[in-house]
Image (cartoon, rainbow over the protein chains, first blue to last red):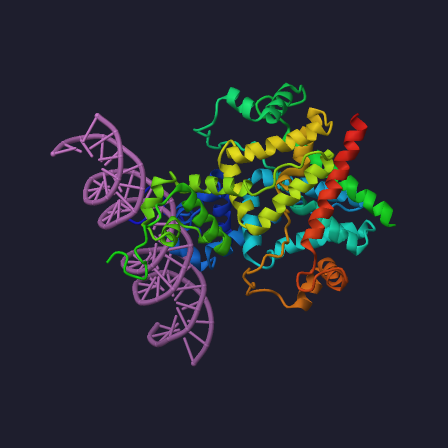
Length: 231
Length: 231
DNA sequence: TTGACGGGTGTACGGCGTACACCTACCTTG
DNA sequence: CAAGGTAGGTGTACGCCGTACACCCGTCAA
């Protein structure tokens, strides 16, 4: 009776922390972090909400676990290259992960704001990043600055104000285009230019990946210059 | 009877959108955005929760209004200087505002993720920023890149992974220092260096303001170089 | 005098995280 | 084999949230 609807009375896979985290990540992937509730995760697993608490101690701790799952998806550091391309590759790998899980920045930032230390997996990631800089000859003080300069770009955050994010609300009260152009002439000019740029993807208006790498390289070049001046 | 407790039966200031937004900002300032609920705002104003809805249409719209209040606190663009210091000053003004309202990035980012356009006040801010770049001789395409490069730094976000944020949870499960050092040797080295740097503020470990300006200038210098190459 | 209306109230609903008591299937130990 | 601990799933309940909806009252125009 309890398992009437099509559940073929299989051996019934037992719950586990891994399964809970997996279901949570999947749910967030498809509905964003707002769609994530203990009740919904439980439902997706065919289980009662409180069952989850045998495997995670709270929703916050579950979010931490999800972060660690994501960090685990970032490629390990490349061996045998210069620091610059090692950092570049790793950051781009992190970015690929973020594109698969667009809700990640929000969750990571929230965690950082609430607790004093990042999750262990994140610490390990950062530690190895620092290791790359050190291996490239950066004096420790410059590594410190480098971390600040890169900020969350270290984790592949594009940290932009305007991102093309599919499935946003269409903004009911949006002004008509002409009024926009009149009130915000510079933005209008910009929008025009971007729209007519032959390089740009139609619809998106600009190539986020290109812009991310552009900004990343500008940053890395700046750091390289600092390194040269320091040594 | 309704106004028994000390309320001296004053003329009773009527509610208004401004007063609601003000109370909301004050509440967020002191308790973070998590402490912000319609019920609490109402309580702070000595009013029943539903009364707020005569002045804001929803909590989301209230958050939008709060953003506009904050943007209004940013200094207007300086006249008669080169683009670089104009941008620099404005961004630092934005940052000062953010330090007064540490919850702002969270709210702004959330809004950006949910809706297609920023609030009008934000649009105006960005428009004038684009105007500064244009006035400095940036070709429109380079302005586009510049916006991407600066990202949310445009608004003074320090967007860092590790920020000293007073009042965070002390992390019950934090590892002892030695184990930390063993597992994350590079981070340990970094922490040591930062702690012993005579420049650094005790306790904080590093001077956020300095690091923010350091990163900002590195970015602006990079843009300046691009501008020279382009012209 | 009347009636519309702006603005504050009261009640209620569905959703949330999770504390706490429970029940049951299994494993260990004698 | 019996006894009993324990890990893991269940059910109920509490207090919070945002907000829909009906109401009610003071002011002001006609």
